[in-house]
View 1 (cartoon, one colour):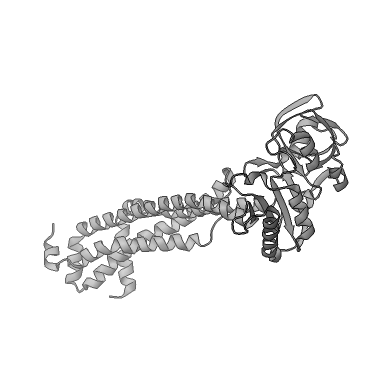
View 2: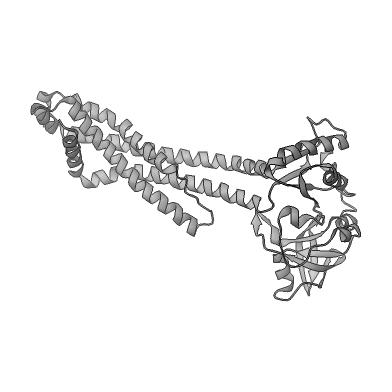
Length: 403
């Protein structure tokens, strides 16, 4: 029997029970749509994390005290940053940072509690790719002189001064009065950190005024950011920094009391965190496809039972067992592929809608569409084979006697 005729017979068999056929595909539809939406959510989350991290500076090498080593949190010094700037080849800028305890800020008759004050060096805007929306950043000379000047994040500037120009205004941080000389461009939230809610001071002023009673006092810094000339030089820079600081700290380079990482390392760590979430979603989608496949097998077995006399009559008129097997297998595959196509449309549309209306970013993964469609086809073949084989093995004479 010609394949086209078998295909037409299979299609007619499905149309005999339209409602049942549609309901049978629901499991596959949900499974395929879930695969596409879940992967879109995962990819969107990872892309958003990468963009946010990269927005804080390009080609960065980040040096910080090692965790889990006693005393390591107190070993990174401002002099280390200066030494890196003088001796490491292939860098275009370096910025050391220190963060004292949150401060109370007063200005313009207002008081703000728990404000983040960040002590940085004068090259901070260049290294971290920050733009100044108005005014200027402090100079290296002002940093050396512990000048009482401040640069505000855009959110803090608005909170304290509203529509008024904050430049030249005096604010009180803790008990220290400083003059506002600049306002940063808006950066927004990155990894739950509000970069617009910060106040930037010279790092030497922070050491003098805010770190005197801290266990992290002196000239110890929290992080050193190094900007490479190009991505190709990052590996060499990491090697140079590791050798230099190991010698300065008198530690084994194989077991340093500091860590050197890149933005890609941070992104990879964040992606590892989302990987567990992605795997969980994949299991949910897989279970949906499994349930859909079981539904297809169940309905096909019912269909074989209901159409036993039809099968016997076709065999009596010359249909071979292989023709019957192909017919019922095609019915299962058609159901599965139809569910797959509908699921793809719903999945793509749902991913876009979820991204537009929800708080999480979504990004369609092109590979997810053929992956989901292929999974639907495999489900149809796998779960349709047993009912099709059962139909093909029916004895024609017994089938004709079936009531």
